[in-house]
Image 1 (cartoon, one colour):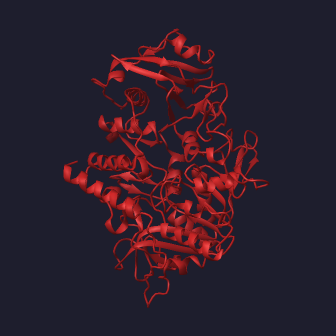
Image 2 (tube, helix red, strand yellow):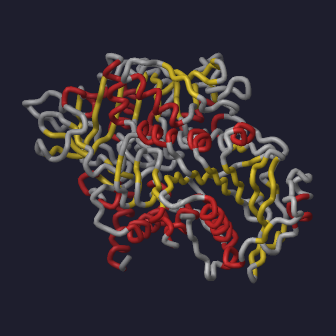
Image 3 (cartoon, helix red, strand yellow):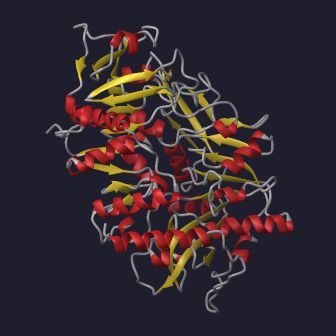
Amino acid sequence: MNLSTKARLVYHMIRWLITRNHYDTRYAFTLPENPKFVGPREAVKLIPDNAFVAVSGLGGNQWASILYRTMRELFQETGHPKNLSVVAIGGMGARGRAPGSVEELGLEGLCTRLFAGHTETFKSILRLADAGKAEVQCLPQGVLAFLIEAQGRGEQSLLIDTGVGTFLDPRVGQGTPVAGTGVDQWVTVEGDRLRYSLPPITTALFNAPAADHKGNIYVRHASMIAETAEIARAARRNGGLVIANVGEVVEEGYADIFLPAEAVDRIVVYPGTEQAAAVKHRRRWPLFTLESDVSVDEGIAQLKLINQVLGITPRRSPVDYALARLAASIFAEQVKADALVNIGTGLPEEVCRLLHESGASSQVRFFSESGVLGGLPAPGVFFGAGVCPDEMVSSAQIFHTCYEHLDASILGVLEFDPQGNVNVSRRGEGALHYVGPGGFIDFSTNAKCVFFVSSWMVGGQMRLENGRLTIVKPGKIKLVDRVREITFNGERALKSGRGIFYVTNVGVFKLTPGGLELVRVVPGIDVRRDILEPSNNAVKLPASGEPSLADASVMTGEGFTIRLKS
């Protein structure tokens, strides 16, 4: 990336930061020959009280921001629409840090119920929930995608294995309710499976790049498709309302029609509608699209700079990079070329970066739960989009693919236990400390090989020097006696015969019928002092009595290479 590109990106972000909270809800683009084109206020006034509203998108992508802001303003002015339920299967909040997300609906009386797969980003609604002013329901992201898809066919429930043995199983945990008193349960046990359901969707709101004068909707140059078509079909099937928010009007035939005009009730054209966070459709970035004009390396470099400007790029240490190399090396030993691979957020993104830099990424196919395939997953605020993708499908379609054929998933960890159970969904008590599983349960249930990547401890201090790792100050280890909440069930995974690995700073554990077995240790770590004693001897050693030693290149990076199995 050259200096002029850096300067352009920094200027772009500064301008966006200054203007990002400027929304003109009275702006109205209309067409005399087509009454479907209305301003945001006219469209939002059609949303009835008590509506069940479905939105589409993931992370900072595909926000229908002008509609969310208008709903907020009209509610503050008139008290309507009120008592809304919202389903947003991906994390489409902004953690209270940016305007324009679904968090705009986080006012007492406006949004009183939220259904989501990943809840942590909806801070304004979670605060209402902790105050007893809103209800929060959590379902696996793939299950939610399937339920929305099913409503388009007139079906209201889904019988599936996903979630059995986890907190969503009423025999194990709380089921779907996260917050609320006397609220409904949206999952029941039926034989050895779980039946999930969802209230009928009555309003669909989505962001798309463009519409033509007839009202046909186009998704050419979108950063993702996500649930757009499915929520529109569901609302239509249920006799509800479909509102599209687009960035521009184009000529008919501009591209393949994604949704015909008859599938949409109202169209709100707004110049500030974004392709992705800080990027307007009218000034789209091709790197997110199927028509990218930059290399993957250039695209990643640009997005990394933007995340740095926004202050959301995590600071990584040499110890973190060694952990990522260890995970990448284990991945390469277990996964064959041409694999379909999902990457989680956090440390798994570092593993993905290493796979790319080593050239191994060309041998696998990455995807995101939004339905973006190929290229590399976009980092940070752009999570859910892709850099130089080669295909886009809906969320439901990509989850169907995962359920049929997912080779590997690299995921993060909050804590794990000797039975191999993993918690990623609950940090602590209360709605504000609830993360939700996102697509974690769907992926970890269906992947042939799962790699959990995590630091060995919280707090404390580690030092990497001369290729050897030393624990300078012990912290609280993430291997606990019993996880706070089961998001991944180790026992069920073992019965399926899949490969389950837990990659940490100190070594690699494999889930076996006898429990966690330490199969690899990093140089400098004393197995008894640093692993067995802190974990109360909850870890097994191999039959040989000694785990293998991680290669020196893993620790130093010098000469580190990755070669996938053929």
